[in-house]
Length: 521
Image 1 (cartoon, rainbow, N blue to C red):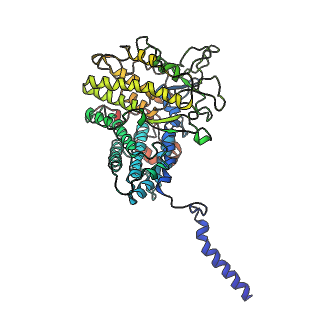
Image 2 (image 1 turned 90 degrees about the horizontal axis):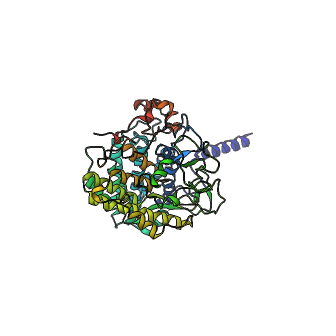
Image 3 (image 1 turned 135 degrees about the horizontal axis):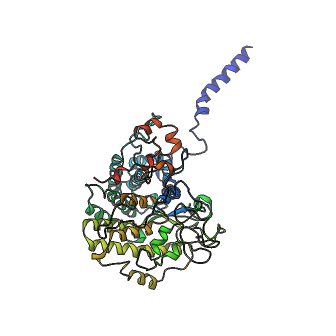
């Protein structure tokens, strides 16, 4: 009996000593618990390229980039989906996919004096806060990663923008350093955007700085010269473009908007983007990019769907094909078009985008010569970008020829004199250059000009004068357009309702509340 008792006691001591290990579910005996800082980078870059296009299926309908094949869809009508996480992917990825991983990468990099990797981290943090506040307005920053809390208060959008700028200043300072353990080969092992090139990340940070400052265009603090200066320190050509190239081999290595992942099958191009390119806004001059970026109908003609109307009313064979140029999903390996292939290099920021930002700032400053120069470079560079994107994956149809490009740029309705340049031309060409990928920035542009309300000082007509809202908007809107996306449902409306109530986000029309950054003062 005594021997049995001793054995049981020993077993109990073993069990007690192993209990902590057994319950420590955060310890994985088969994987390292402390990894080098650079190993955290590539998964985050994947989501930087993916999250905006993920949510772009929804906000791209606010901007009329795309529209649903079915009539009366909520987002086509400037609405939302109640009790759903639709429109919450960027929210999820900023707080979770990047989240603590990004904080750990920065902290570890700083401790090891890897200033280049730390600088990339600060640039990504700035990118995340900018994307998130531009989508949602008020967001959680100060308390976001406080692990002692279960509820989180929201910060103002003004504070969010100050955090973007603060993080960009730190990114720029770090990316300029060459001391310590700065090492292009170490960074390049997991840098799927620039392969460890610190100087290109510095240009990226300046580009994001220019974009951020330009969003203040409705504020008295707006300084066009600062925007122009930041652009001039940023991308010098398409060779500086930021993006992620996919192999097309497995699901996560395929472009999210590519055919194999089948995420955009139920959407079609709109009348709005068609009219941008078919000559309607350029005095009858058709844009050569139209046949490379947009999809024809089965009969070979190019058409667009009226937002919210669906395709049921089209006669047989006349509805636009899907974005890949086909009536149904193409088989794996079939050539598609533009940036929509499984293997496409999906853009995060481009040279042409930044030139249009510079053109807008110079126009507002009253410097028409600089505005025209940047505008012309933006149009020209994007035409080249279309060719680069198609050649990158062997897409169809063939490249825009030098003759086609020269003829288009020679038209005074496309490239006017400095005196005749309009704000609408700048913003329309930027819309084209961002079509299909720059969903958040395009929506920010439209909200800064209050969709089709604010006028072009050069013409007295609306900047986006061809933008037409659906006849009937979503029922909760009260006749108002969308100005923000509601916070992510499952993390906020389920678990953080008191904080939502404090900012008025429990109201059914909260998504129509204009954001601080777009208000004029």
